[in-house]
Image 1 (cartoon, rainbow, N blue to C red):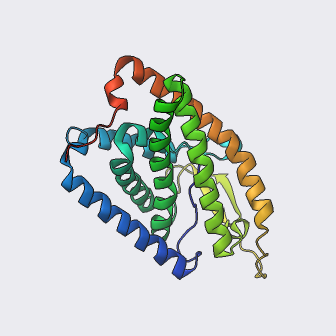
Image 2 (cartoon, one colour):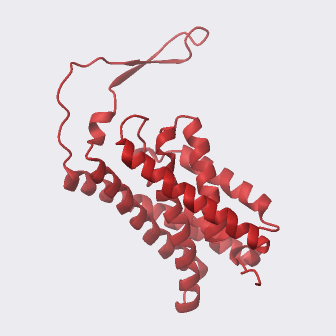
Image 3 (tube, rainbow, N blue to C red):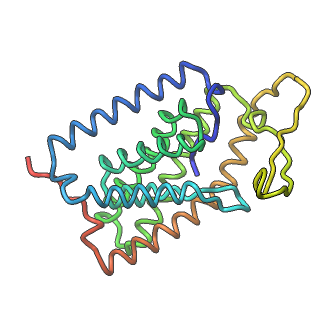
Length: 247
């Protein structure tokens, strides 16, 4: 999952502000476009809500062995189109931030990362539909893998520009069972560590780990998206077509 899981106050202020400014400009442009082309969203309001809910569920669950989350962002782009899909990505990222899934200040950057998957996945699926003699499954699979690879590169680039070491941002903690009527079933205690100088970011090593684990996640999400798209192509093929509005 190409998502920056960092709390507030970690990334440089200039980078956070840049992310918010760019995201706000794109969201404003999307809203203007949808207002000028209501056919792009007419009849898809309910679909946007359902797709956004699916994205929230996927991004909240973790594939434990590789610490990966299913974004379902490419599926959102296929079902909603790039404009409405980007809007759904912003809504989902903002709602997840309210639940502590990444800081509020990182919403702008996370929206750009997830929005890249939505837009690129939507475009690639339609390009492959016109140029490849392949089934909907393989078109969705290839579009998902490529879109996630690009968004992961964008995420790694953001970490590299910020010059922070993600490993230094994760607090050590212990979890023990406790009285469920007093403190909950599990009590989490953060371990206090002695102050020390943060380690320098080893970007090649960080990128290598992210790509190695991420590639497995890309394939898994590509398979999931491909199976969903193949099923929809058989029962509701109209859902996979986002018609352009007439001028």
